[in-house]
Structures are given as C-alpha cells and as structure tokens.
Image (cartoon, rainbow, N blue to C red; front, side):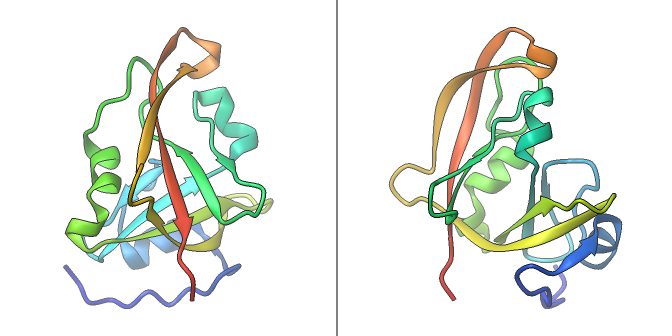
Length: 147
C-alpha cells in the first residue's frame, strides 16, 4: 500500500475520476476500498439512491450517517465493500465519505468517519432496486471523527 497522504479538506469538491486516479478504489461502487492507499471511500446520494435500493440517511445533527451496504438485489452479504467497511479498524483504513455534488461527475468531501463501536450495523428490510421485492440490507452506523 502506498503512503500517499490524503490531502482533501472537508467541503473540497473533486471530480470522482480524479479522486480514484490519485487514491485508488472502484469508480462505480458506493463503497470503494482502495488497494493502493489506506482508504475506503463511501459515496452517498440519498435522493437518488432510493431508486437503486439504497436508503442512506443522516441524523438530525448531520454527524452520524446511516449508510446502506452494497448489493442492489437479494439479501446483502458481508463480502467485498461491506466486509471492507466492517473491518476498517483492523485493516487500518480510513473511511472517507463523499456526497454527490450538483456538478456532474463531482463529489464533495464530507470528512472522515468511523463505525460505531457498539453497533456497527443492523440488518433491516428494504426494497431492492426499482422498488423490487423486500430483502435484508445492512445499515452501517458511521460517526464523523472529530478533528
């Protein structure tokens, strides 16, 4: 893994492709664990995510994100991005949250987050993509790290 330091500051806007060019991670996934830097990138867009079976939401303070795991159809499983997220403390990877910006193909850096120590996720029922059948999904509980 590279020692490439993470240089973005909160509210910085970057083209998603440039983010991945610099730090790695899958360009298509909502959970993009980097193989070349110690980062896991999460991308949230609550308004559009529901169409694809993702039900992300913020607490009233805007410091806790309830993030739907990956997998649009069928029950979600604790593999790939979901497993990377769950294991982030053991692997030493920082969770970096981004929101889709109004500018096409750009994302806004929200900040670094960590999974809740006591209840990192719950399993709940939610509809699959395009209001498909109900399935079990992971809802990860992420707290913004204080500076």
